[in-house]
Every structure is written in structure tokens, then in C-alpha cells.
Image (cartoon, rainbow, N blue to C red):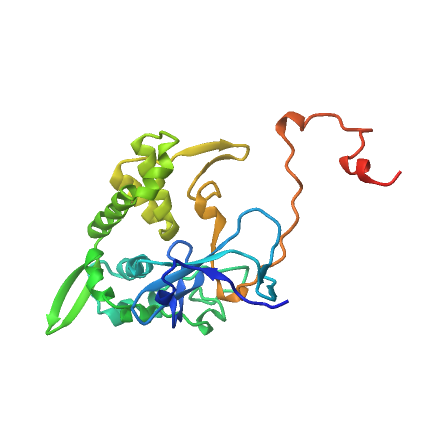
Length: 296
């Protein structure tokens, strides 16, 4: 049984030839994750389906691959990766224009701290800076610097030397266009035809889709910009929002993390859910269902 990764992309598999790894902070969680780019300048992410179900394996030709998880390699707009980095630089001094080298540096990367590691005086774990972060390589992606005008105010201070500063107004306008584009997508619209949901809920679902690439602050800013409120659902633990629960489709996807080596880790077994109507039934003295299948 071999240990390999099986991943899927669209039929134009030539687009994902010669991929180069990039270690970047996830724009939503700030967790260090693996992304890829090719020689055509396209940025890709790999997502692994972590929905319910038994462990599985792939049988390809005469080989069995023990990690049977489903992974998808999909193109990603690099501006989503740039936003939290630009925002961090903006928070340090919101009056200052900066060069790309100054913005896309380790100093403007805020990684999620996993576990209970001891922090130093600057709030950094002992091994955090020993792991590679490739934010400076984002500027090598074809067309990336030109696209930054969607998020930033830009000034030319010398011949072909530009400086940048994040603009909240431009960024929110860009995000609104992303929402509109999703809502005009035929596949996205078709998913709402059978439900007959009103347009407002359709727009909210488009925002939830974008929230896979936005932290909580930008998610809330976008809701405010669109003048809509987040739907809440009542559960036993109280009011929680779709942004932080598995209620949205994003709950079944997990971004590839380098420390996981792309392999499934054993999951804790959960007790089967009991229908609420049977939860209070007195089962004392009742035989288990498995007793009917044992030898007499």
C-alpha cells in the first residue's frame, strides 16, 4: 500500500504542470498553509474534503493508495492572500505609503499560534520564524502588482517606482464586485432555483462563500457595506453564526497544511446521534440491535 496524494483539478491539467510550492498564511485563519503557482503565474490552493464518512483508499491500476481523501486543486485570486498583509502594514501606520518590499515582508505576517507554546517578549514562538513564509514571492506572480490598484492607493515616486497604501473604500468596492460576480454565476444561481430563496439570502450566501478567504473583520465590513445582516440559527449551545460553524459548505473543506504531510490523522470516535424523540426513552432491559445477529 503506497502513501501518495491524489488531487483533482479541471480537465486542463496542463495548467497545473510544474507547480512550485508557496508557504503562505491562510487569509481567513492566518494558519501557515501550502499554496502553489505555475510558470503561467496562476496561484492555486489545495483543499481536502473532511466531511463525514469512513476512511477510504484509492485503487489505481495495480496500486492501492492508503490516503483516500478527496483533494481539489483550484485557482485562487492572489489579492485575497495580499489583503491581510496589506491590512497589517496599514494598521502600523495608516498614513504611510510603502514599497512592495516593505509591505510583503515577514514583519507584516500575523500567524496563528497553535497550541500552548511559550511566547517571547514580542509575542513570537521560539520556532515560528524558523518556518518558511513566502509572502515576498507573491509579487512575482504575473499581473499581481497591477492588480493591487483594486485594493490600494498607488503613487509613483520615481520612474516606474511605485508605493502603495491599503484603501478600505477600494477594497470593499472590490469585494462587492466579487459578490456580484458570484451572484451572476449560472451554477451559483441554479443552486437557488429549487429553494426559491429571496435575493437577499442569495447575496448573503455569496458573502459566506467569500468568507472562506476573509477574516472576521473584513467579513463584518462587507456585510455592513452591503447593508445586510448575518443569519443566525438556534442550537442547544446558543446563538452561533454561519461564519464560525460547519453549517456552511466551507466546513467540509480543509486547507492543506505542511505539518500534516497531507496524511489523514486518526479521528476520535463519536457516539452516534440519537433522535431527540428517542432520547428520553427508557432502554433498560432492551436488547441491542447487534444481539439479533449473533449465533444462538
